[in-house]
Structure formats: C-alpha cells, structure tokens
Length: 352
Image (cartoon, rainbow, N blue to C red; front, side, top):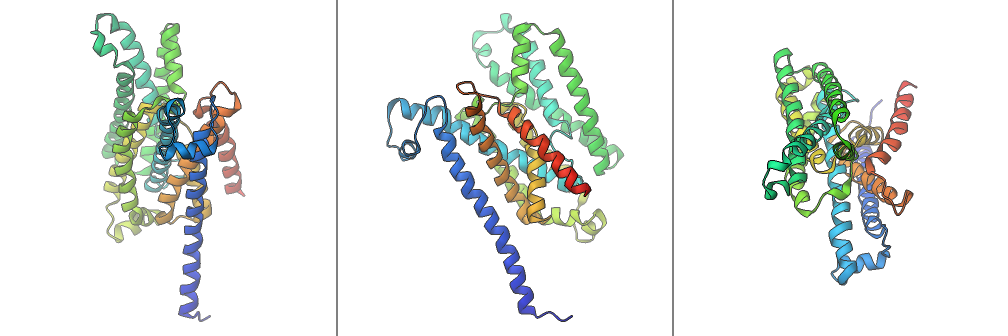
C-alpha cells in the first residue's frame, strides 16, 4: 500500500508532539508539587506566602523556614529523583536489562555499608581525634558511603574487563556485591552499641532533610554533568537497544559505552547515597513507567525519566511530611511502599 510522504510526515510530527506534550505536562505538574512541598510542614505556610517568599517579600521566621529548611529539601528531592531515575534509565539501556538499577548493581548497598563502617570507626577513634575533625563527622560518613560506592563500581568494572563487558556479567556481579555488602552491614549492626546502631539504621532511611545548600552544591556538580552526558549519548542508547552487533555496525563502541556509562551512573548514585542515604525504587520504576508511555526512544526517555524521578520524590516527600504529622516519615519508606506494588503491576502486565 502506497503511503503519501506528507501523511507519513504529519503522522510522525503528531507522534513527536504527543511525547513533547507529555513531558511538558510532567514539568508543569512538577512545578506545582514543588510549590506545594514548600507549603507543607509542621509550620503551615499558605501558597500565597510561599510565592511571596520566592519573590523575596517575606522576612523573619517565614523566610528562615522557607529558605533554610523547606527549599533545600525540595531541591534535594528534585536533584536526587532526577539523578536516580537517569542512572536507572542509563543502566537499563547499556545493560539491555529492565532490572538494571542502582540496587541491582549493588551501589546503594555499598554506600550503606560504607556509612555503617564509618560510623563505627568514628565512634571508636573520636576520643583521640581533634575537636575540629570530629565536627566534620557527618561529612566523613558521607565520604565513607561515597568511597564504598566507588569500590563497588571498580569491582564490577574489573570483573567485566576480565570476563568481557557483557550485560549479564555486570548484573550478576552487582547482585553478588549487593548481597556481600548487605551481609557486611548486618555484621556491623550486630556488634554496634545502641548509639552506633541508631546512626547506622538512620542512614539506611533515605532522608531529604539531611542536605544543606553546600551539600546540594556538591551533588549538583556531579548530577548536572552526568545528566548532560546521558542526554548526549541518547542516540548511542538507541543503537544499543537494537543489539550489540547493530550498534557496532553504526559505529558505537559498545564496551566503552557500557564502562563509561556505568562509571557516570555510579558517580551520580554515590553522591546521592552519600548525602541523602538509600532511596529505593526510583531508578527502577521511573524508567519503566516512561518507556511504557513513550516507547524506547532515548531521545525522550532520558529527559522524561529525570522529570518523572523528580516528580516522584517531590510527591513522596510531601506525603511523608503529612501522613504522620508532626512526625516525618523517611521518604525511602514511602518510595518502597509505592514502588514495590507498582513494580509487581509492571511485571504482571509484561507477562500478559
């Protein structure tokens, strides 16, 4: 059947416009929830007061609450959500595995172990450390989490280089590392005292309120370049989606793409875990959700995954502050409650 070129062009243009409209809607909904998250908390703040605060028209207590407490938390939700979702989308692309995520490859477990080990070591040696160094305790714990995330990455890269950088090798190595680091964390918790145990458990609960403006600056220095890198590689991801041989035929260095993509993903996950703790399912669910709606074209999957991840964490954080008010539920608890049923639903639909 002969198709008129103009009809094909019009159909493609409409197809693209639908995807663009969807992403614009995600962005606008995200802006709305960003403003709502600034108004929600123990100390209520109407939306009109939030808007005045954003324009610099508030003073005193309201200004302090908005810019020192709620704004960093909302920005952390956007940064962490976008970073984790981008990392998950990239991992699923370069590994051609829908289960690819920071959890699958063991990065989050490695960060939790690093934080737990640092907490225990600091507790033992803090009496002999100078006071100025002890004051950097939270930063040292974050550094420990970051270092062990990078150790997990190095192990996966070393194994993949030895055995060949195949997706199956990387995923299986990540699963083994995740189990190893989880066992290590449990071992440390068993021998920890009450104070150390509380600190370790608290670290495993992802908490957006931990990050201040300086922490967010460090996170942005990693997350923004990482996001730009993944967007620039969107065509390579599309080529790999068609198969390794097809990608090589199109001039894509598949092994190099996997290795560099894994390093960038691990950096983004590491800095998030280091400052905010372990936040689950964002990197797994959001790319699934986006691909089901927009398809496997990574020109749209990459930016839309970032928007969806930011929106998911904004919504989860807003709800976490309201469900048990005046107590604040850790956002990681809520993302797991939301993510597990959603993932099961996705699996059931896939089987059908």
